Structure formats: structure tokens, C-alpha cells
Image (cartoon, rainbow, N blue to C red):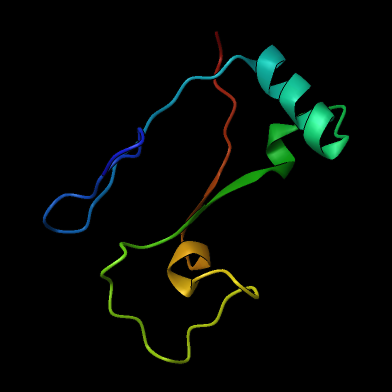
Length: 84
């Protein structure tokens, strides 16, 4: 926990909800990735990372110079537009 990140409960469950401005998100995506249209039906969210003290098998690998605990994918979700 920390830096605004949610934490799992004792059973490992996590519920996270965030509301973002579509306009601001679109500008950020365009600036960073040259994506002009958000198109949420074609997007997903990946969560990466585990606790620093997590015991990982030696088979878990990462990018050069980046600890595996940082890049390990732990969850994925589709983006679903909601009506105003």
C-alpha cells in the first residue's frame, strides 16, 4: 500500500474504481503513444507488480535491469464505457 495504490484484503481480493476524464485521458494517450482515439472496446488494463517481499520462483523473469516483482502481470481487465 502507498502512493495511492489499493491493497488486497486478507483473502487476496481487490476492488478498485477510478473515474477519469475521457478528454484528459485522450490527450495523455495521444501525447505519449500517438493514439488519437481512445476506443475503449479495443483497450484493456494490465496490473503489474507484487510486494517487495513476495517469494517468486526462479523461473520468473523480467526486462533487463528491472526486478521481476515489478513487471510480473497479476491482473487484467477490459475497459467498459458507462453512460453519463
